[in-house]
Structure formats: structure tokens, C-alpha cells
Image (cartoon, helix red, strand yellow):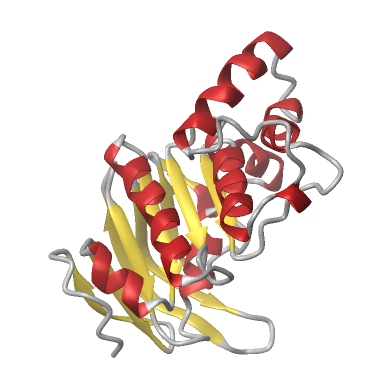
Length: 228
């Protein structure tokens, strides 16, 4: 489903953020990308959703070489790849339902279809009873659930999470990761970049460790964080 083939990413400053990375992630797999700050975790995710174009190598998502996509086609890629970040990026003047539905509005989705899809995804993330709330009326964990629902509502094949628990307490962090593992168990490929050792040790799924942009460990048996 996601394949990085000898991917190197150099920034204009001359910094090599990712070096000769080769990774294959299957459909429905949950993978944690770990490493210290600046190790290349976010860079790897950005290469997958084409925020960055690799200096060399290729990135394949659902059989498509996204590293070779013309800029005009990148919005179509983003419809197949859901993304959440540490900051929730919700629209403060819109309700939960409107925030999630906004992802469908930009695609011109008919209202009937939008009002069918949004309640279903809100139920999936445990917010079925809060569709009419505004972000300011929600806890941090609930706001992150909204951002997950918004990223899911288009039915992406790949779901990327960049430090999704960075602003959350340990109990809430675990609730969010349980949602993400459930998404993977339903068949969506989930790749999470995190520095949260406790979460990685607890979830016991595949772990890829980065050190100075280089993959130093790929443990498919869920061996825990074990930063190199």
C-alpha cells in the first residue's frame, strides 16, 4: 500500500532529513515511526503525502508513484490520504458536524451524501452525541477525535498521524491510539510518527526507528520504542 524505495530528502539548507529509506507498509497495517526530534519522522510522512518531493528515490502510495506527481494532481492524492497533526486545525466558528463535513464540501459532495457520511464517522470516533458542539466546547482529546473524523470521512486508503498525542495526557493519548488501531483493523493503512515511548510500548505493533534520517530498526513484532 505504501512503499518508499531508497528515498532521500535534502532540505535547501543542505540538511539531509532522510537518507536512503526503504519501507514497505501493507494494507491495514499499523506502524509507529519513532526517533528523537529531528530524526526524520515528519519528513517521512511529508514525502508520503507529497508535502515534500524526495531528492532521490520514489514513494508509491496505492500503486501510484506520488513522488512523480505533477502539482496539479497532488489534491487528488490528498483525497486518498488522511492526515492528522499534533495541533487540531479545527475551524473555531463551525460545529463538529460542519468541521468534519468541510472535507466533503471542498469536493462538492452532495448534501444528502454528506449528512449520511458525517454521522457515521462521528460515531466511529465516539462523538455521535456532540455533532452540534463547537471546538471551544470540547476537550483536547475530543478535538483530536474531530480532526481524525475529518481525515476519515473521505474514506482514505492511507491514514497518517504526525505526533497525534503530543498535546494530550496519557489516558487520552491511549484512547486516540486505540481509535487509530481500530482504523487499521478495519483495513486502512495507518502510519503514526511519535516520540511517545509509553504509547509505542503499549500498542505492540510494528515499529520503525529513525536516527539522523536513517532507518536503524524495523521491528515487525512490536518490540517497543527502544530508540537507537
